[in-house]
Every structure is written in C-alpha cells, then in structure tokens.
Length: 465
Picture 1 (spheres, rainbow, N blue to C red):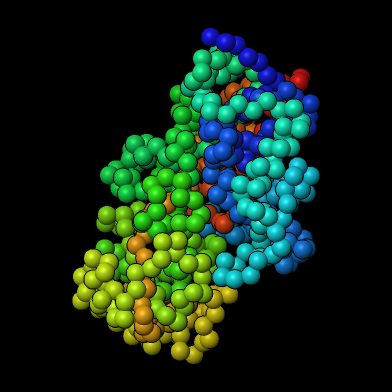
Picture 2: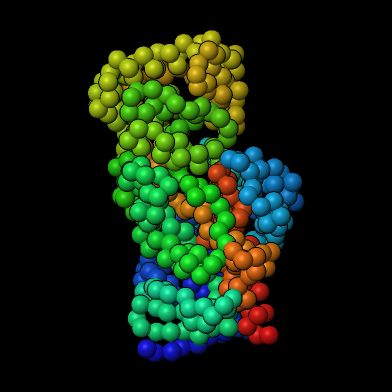
C-alpha cells in the first residue's frame, strides 16, 4: 500500500468540497481533494445547479431588491417542518450574506437578474453559465493555489483510533495520512437499497437527479465509526421530474415546472394535493415526496392551451389532445375518471374567487376553488381550452437529509457526546442539521458554501496548530 500525506484531505468534488478546499488553502494548508468522478463528470450535484439564495440588504446588478436576513429566516422556517437545529440554521442564514463576495473573489461570475415564473430575481443570485461553470472556476482557482486533486478516487475506508481519523483509504491501494479530514461527499440518494430501508418498494420508482456516485459510502463509514446522525431518515430534497428522463443524472433539465398552473392527478385519475399552495420556489420541492407517496410513484401534470408556453417547456415534449378524454387515453388512464376530475375542478373554479381576480403567474394571485378537496389556493382557472397537455412525473431525488451531526465549527459529533477531533463535514452530508422536510430553491448551495468555509477554516486551524 502506498502512503501519502496532507494537512487537509477533502473527500468530495462538489460545491461544499471546493469551498472547503479553497478556504483551507487560503489559510496555508496543504490540501488534497479526492473526487470520485472522472474529471469530465466532476462536481456531483452542484454541476446541475443554477443559483444560490443569500440574504442581502440591497439589490444590485444581479438581484432586484433587498432580501433581509429576517425574511430568509422566515422563508426557511415556513417550508416543511422548518429548520432542524435552529442554532445552526440561524448561523447559515447569517453567514449567507458574506457568501457572494467570497465566491466572486474565488472565481464566481454572475448573471443579471432573471424574469419569468420562477420568482427568484430578488432572493437568488444566478451563476453565469450555471453550476458547471462555477465549479470549473473553483477548480481553476484551486489548481493555481497548488491544491492536489485526485480524480477517479473512491474512499473505501476511514480508519479511526478513538476520536481521531488516522487514515483515508482509497480504491487504488493508497493510505492517506491527514491532520484534518473534511467529508463533503454528498448523501446516499443514489443508493436505492438504502432508500428502500425507509421507503420500501417505492424507492424502485425514484429517479436520481444527480450522479450515481452519491451512494453514501463515506457517510456509512462515519456512522459505523460512531458519528451521531442528524436529519430525517425519510427526508430528502425531491422534485417532480419527467418520468421519461434517465434514472440517474438527468439534472435540472428534467424538472417539470407546470404544476402550479394546471392540475396534478395520480394513476387513478384523481387530484391529491393543492397545486397552488404557495409561490413555486418555496413549494416545488414538496412534489417529489408527494408523488413518492402515490400508488406506483407516478403522477401526471395536466394543463390547457391558455398557459402552454408560459413556463419552462418539458424536455421530452408533452402529450397533447383536443379533448380531455383523448389525453387520458394517451396517458393510459381511465377516460371517464379523468374527465370527471377535470369537470369537478372547473366547477370549483367557477364557485371560488377565481372569476373575480386576475390571473397572474408572477405571484400568488388568490384565485381559489370552492368546495373542492383538496382545494387549489392560487392560480385556479378552468381547464377548458384545447389542445390539452400532460406529462408523466416521477419523484426526482436531489439529495437526502439523513447525515452526520456537527458543531458550530463543523466538527462531526459522536454518539457518546463528544466529537471527532479532526473530522469535519460540509454540504449535503450534514444538511439534515438544518433541513427537515422542506426546501427553498438555491438553499443547498447556501449550506454548502457557508459550511464549506467553516469546515475549511477549522480544518486548517486544527492541522496547522
């Protein structure tokens, strides 16, 4: 076995890992980054991202107005069951305000504020060229800083002596000694067997939006070594994706954005959840879980010609037909049931507040149904203008929330009440400290950036003594 050494070893190659790497290198540490993927697939889930959500007091060229810390905190508390650990969540919100300047200094470039139906122009900053371009900039910055980067390198084992990690073993027969280890290798979303422990056979119907590499191997090593876990076992960030998309690595392009502006039915042809519950960036991530709970883990988004073309188009096109019955047939659903569902919805729109309010895709418009269960709270308008459109949807898992518990210094906690002296965590592998069952668009990148900086700072401090 070949032995290597470094002040800081970073396990992972996505946003949190790169931020931790750059921060530790800035502090003077010799850093080795281990990326499981080959160079052309480097970056994990982060290469599929587009934006980051950060608090800011004023607008600028890249945001259209202020987004105070108090509002970000309120938004975070308002999704799902709110934050898991309020102390760590509040720290994340507070530190988010300093993230954009740090990112710019390390190579990030920004896109002017967007318009459209996503409603993110004020709250989120978009990366010029998307997540892949951001990561490429970070990698170039790391290379200029002298960081050693090893691709196609899978960590097979973490060796421990009590509360200290003494070695990192990789699949090419190397043992790496490091004064500090930062685990930023994502969750276990690509491990369908692990998901199956909590979801049973339903997990077989899940799609994984990111790479197949995120199988939770490093997380399992930490838990087996006595790390304390944090986060909901069944918790994940999951959205509705096109059922025709790849099983793995479909990314953001397979997401279905039409849900608020039509209706959603299950394989029995019935509605099952309020499609207009709230503005899209706060509620889009509930739909993966919603569909995961339906029979066969499949659902169908339906809309009509009035809104066709007003949101991001489905990657694989739509099923379309001149009548609702013909649309149901093309989807393999029972014609009469689907027609009855649409008719009941249309009648509830007529009885509700919708006829007296203007339809607006820019914000919640108060157009509600009446006498319908479940109701539709916003954007309720009749489906009555052919052609009718539909897409089949499956749960698209982005990342899991079950991970390791950490301190405010990003040290990994132990089940015995102590901490690992030299092991730190950042990103999705510790997101369960902050997230419960809900999600805010762009906040995963916030967690990775804030906690990558904390982990990099503290790991370098420990290593350099």
